[in-house]
Image (cartoon, rainbow, N blue to C red; front, side):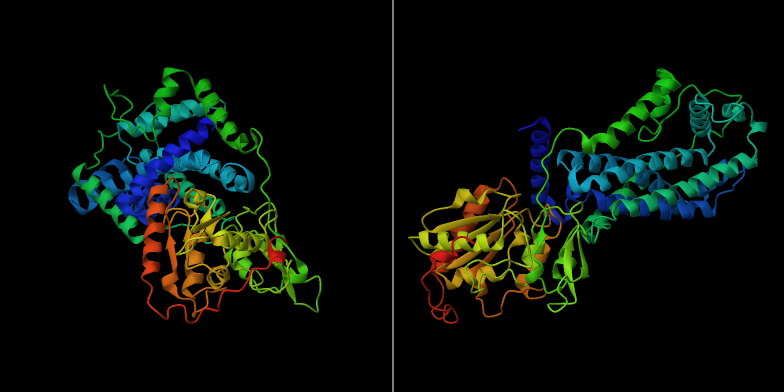
Length: 523
């Protein structure tokens, strides 16, 4: 196990602990991207309120900001604090999101576009935040503007040093302040556009957290803003040099770094970090993930795989055989995650097909649905005790092989969402007393929608659905997560105990067990 993988294991252990405290749906470590969107909108909304009362002149900016804090207390003070703390929290969440995605190995493969498109967002966020401090035009704003100008002057962006604009109060004209306003409005708009591009290669992006998580985040920000109000330093005066400055280290740390080293050194650090992030998807070797394959002769163009793909990797194109259907699915290999959720969505992925060897309309190489049927039949034939339980698991969660026993068959899929619902009925009709499905922690599917789609298929609200005549008491879904083998083993034991207490007649709708055909063992 590499250092990155060990670090991610520790991260997942922390996530699991927070799952027990908040539930996976409200676990902030699992919803970092959604929280980032929420914080952006909180900063934007509070910023619009502050802008309404801002005097956009160099002489009046400081007084107008102070008036919001003092004359509109407590509303104005809280909104100003909300703007500041939401912006600071956005930096923390952004870097936490970056770290998690890297540790999870999400910088490479089909996710490269999301990773690369996220790098400019770091620059835009910092430019937006640093520029926002200048609008207050206090001593801290003067320090930040001067330091930034000296940094830019090092590369000779203008014929005259830009830092000269801050040598005296007379040189800070309203036109310069208008530029500050323009930047602080334009850069956040560019950031929002970049965030939109960042999520374009995923379907149904998680752009807003759950209600409980959103409420908790909002309450925390408001309490923070009320308990520690944001206050300005004295009005900017180039003739005075303050003895100390209370820096916002989330945004303004580059300034002391530059003065401790040099503008050139800071440029080297920023450029080096950007280049490293940009080339990271191609550093080292990583085996190519298998992508889904469409069987044109078995695809009827229903579009279920298109609707269920979490990464928009499937498109519908004119069918190669017009007499079969007007359209068919086509996989875009560069976007395919190899999760197999599309195979679970295909209506032809049913084990009840009569042919010994069959092909699904869309399938995963090496993990074909026909092979899964053969594996299930062999596992059922090997069960000797009762009640007999079949466990379908997920490669990204707890290893279900650990619960395999004389009375328990265990089969693992790429993702739980790869399981066609008809396999539950097939297992019950062929000797199983119960079927248990497990996977990642609740609300934390590694492939985003595997859990959600499977639950909706079982509930009959999504196609292909589990037939209504399948006894639901013989089916149990347990989202145990990774590293939760004791919990999974306890769930299997509890499920088996409930099966022994099954009421007479529960099995009346089930067809008598038939002999398993050896010819079905392998397509």
